[in-house]
Amino acid sequence: MVNTSFFMGILGLVIFIIIVTTFQKLLKNNESGFLHLLMCFMFLCWLPVPLVVYIELKAYSFLFIGALLGTVSLILYIIKMILQASHLSYSARASNNDKELWREKNEWMLNGLLGSQVELLAGFLKGIWTIFLTIVFWLNGQMIFSALGIIYSLFTIIYLLKLLDTSLIKELKILKVLSINTLIINLETSSWFLILLIWLKIN
Image 1 (cartoon, rainbow, N blue to C red):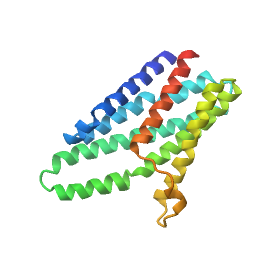
Image 2: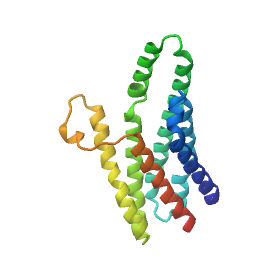
Image 3: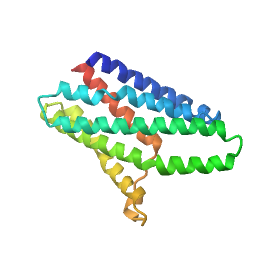
Image 4: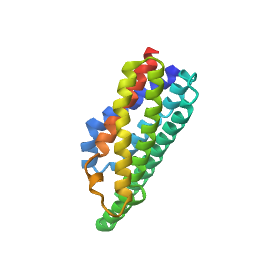
């Protein structure tokens, strides 16, 4: 199970590298739908990781809650990406008739129904899972991974603040201090899973 999950995790990282190196060309060619499909596959490859890490550390039973939240986080990412891929692919084909109409529909879909709140909630849940893992790494005497976990746990606060910022109609200046975008989210997520894959390999 560990080896299979490790292979899938590496495949997810390969897909991430492909996304980083080709996304500008894909966007230029109006292939946003395919780009989001690649991101869906990326998160799908990482889906087994929370459960496998929990099994490896099952002596700490409370980690199950964290693993559950981590899994839900990935499922949210997957659902969001496949729905966005479906909409954008259809929109790209249909927009030839009325580009302005479909531009408005894309704006409504991507910033409304499938807006950043879904991604921020997923990131927040992933952050809680990271906190659980950080505690377990510390209890297990793995201080390097625990220290890395502390750093990545800080993103939990950022995700929560940005989630509140996008949910509240009245703007709060304190919530405008921190800035986070899709690129930062993907870099943070992919690097965290790289750390966990390294942990799986050496353990």
